[in-house]
Length: 259
Image (cartoon, rainbow, N blue to C red):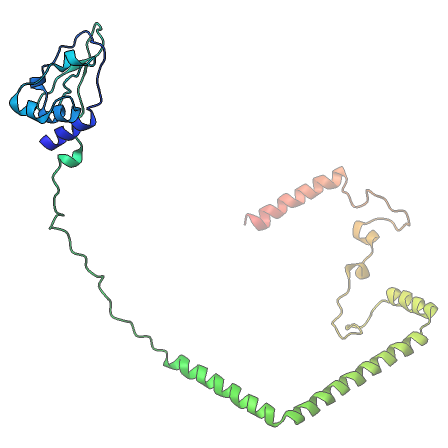
């Protein structure tokens, strides 16, 4: 602890106050530590050992004051006020007080994670399938290399047949284009639209079902006299017919739905 005090005195030996302040008292040299006196350069070593210390307050214009320490915790007050607030010097560094200790011996040991047993997967059927595919591919490639020219011959024949078929179709289109008669085409289209099928099957072979317009006309459907005039209100029921329709609906509901 004396070493820290000596270090603090050595660092603060330059602090001095040239003028006397109110509230401070002169400090005798006997109260000052010897290390502080020696470091200040004002007193020799022989004077410190013999005890004959000169009055430094008179010799120099500056006046030294004893700083607060752990042994002599003096309170230094600020300028006079109604309520005095004390200022205390800070304690020494923590590294000089706390003792160094070894790490705690009771530390949980680090263990490696447990290894689980490997899980075996049965892949033999899949491996056999892959090998079979590889063998088939190998045989196919060998057969293609062996019969390369035969396959090329088949390919040429196939392309030749396709080209001949294309030429035949183009010739048929040209023949139809040269023999096309627009007037005849229009007459045939109108005749086909007006034709009424009486057979049970259409020309394509599909079974023919007659449309309702072939079975009855609009006049017969709505009980109207035959005329060429088209009435926009035709088909709408009158007030009397609406009453009859409502009665028929109620009768139908009672007989069939509520039964």
